[in-house]
Image 1 (spheres, rainbow, N blue to C red):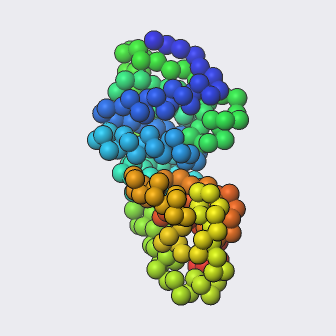
Image 2 (spheres, rainbow, N blue to C red):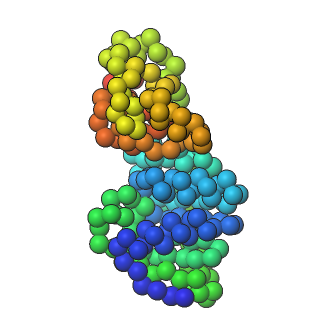
Image 3 (cartoon, rainbow, N blue to C red):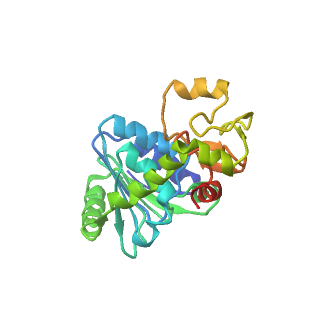
Length: 233
């Protein structure tokens, strides 16, 4: 099968490929923004024992501090490549070469085109090209990622200092219900029960626990970037 696909069909094929993978996933994209279905698919793949590797632009590593840390925690192996522009997504079953980055906005709004194939010869060509590209990659530094994790963990632990910086009231990061501000408990009762069924610390939620702004948060990182900066200054 060789098929030209466009727009939201690319996202559908990509998620299907991730969910159907059994041995490995190679995701090559200059730009990355996580969204719910992508996170869930990658997490499920890791739990199935799939070897997941993600490649991105070297000059984006620092900018992607908030994106990379949950991927690293999941078990995704992260690498960066200088001057990367290729968008190529591979499993042992299927390959997709596309104009679409791993960015939530692109999956919903951009006009994109790609080629999806499970043809054996085409997959060999995709894999050969990916190996040539990957040979130029550098493994993402653990120390850099650990620094970001430590900052977040320090904020959570320093409750007394936080209370001096922020108001006492917070909101549920899923539904905006008013609750006491506590980075360790950023859910209302209803949605904590829902979260507790799977206990995925990296599951993407909707709002900042402190300022109510729409933001991709999680139980590990319940505050937005601006509030985070205020806390650590």
